Amino acid sequence: MTVARRGDTTVVIDTGGTRTKGAGTDSISVIAPDSTAPFRTPAAGPLGVPVPPGAGLSTPGTPGSSFPPVAPADVAALRAKSPAVPVAGVAKEKLVDSFDDARGASRRHNAIDIVAPRNTPVVATTDGRVLKLHNSTAGGLTIYATDASSRYIFLYGHLDSYRPGLMEGAAVKRGEIIGFVGTTGNANPTGPHLHFAITRSDNVREWWKGTPLNPFLVYRGE
Ligand SMILES: [Zn+2]
Figure 1 (cartoon, rainbow, N blue to C red):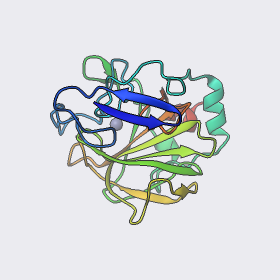
Figure 2 (figure 1 turned 120 degrees about the vertical axis):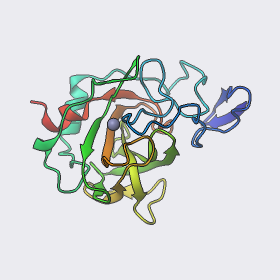
Figure 3 (figure 1 turned 90 degrees about the horizontal axis):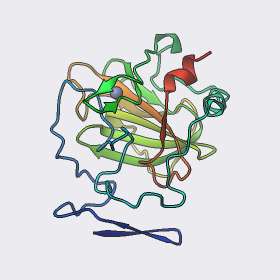
Figure 4 (figure 1 turned 90 degrees about the vertical axis):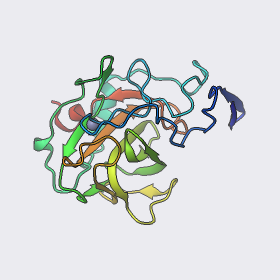
């Protein structure tokens, strides 16, 4: 049992049994590493939305921590930021839409994969702030960041490494190098790529929550 204080609300998280680690630590080893399976977000819930390791039973309906609807206006708002393709040197015309691809029996990918050689720089897609540097069995080294409006969360997964010195809470500029492409987590070791996801959030302090939004539509949608 973990009691986390968030603002003036106390959130009680029943981590159950021996799973005593809190959010932000890797406790999803129940998912066997699968070198051929694309990245599944940490301990994805029944709808394929990411749930933090150790908080899978956290209080549903907690004010300010829901999964807000995604509207076409959200895609338009992101597109208006002229977001950078998050892998250096990759043209947006090269992006492939795998957002709706099945991952396992009941999950969707809810992300796009951007193939690039190992150690290709990963750049911040918009101005914003680093929310969390996270390491999990599935996603490997991952950066969660938000945009300047704190309405959207960007997830950069399977990184080979973070940019040296990158800190949680740090401001980042569009195009700034934040990490490097790799195969950490359950990525195929011979297929380096960036797993890139966007969620609509209403409380970026809960960086693992949000409604998936297709990045492909942001870069390529008409
Ligand atoms: Zn992926």
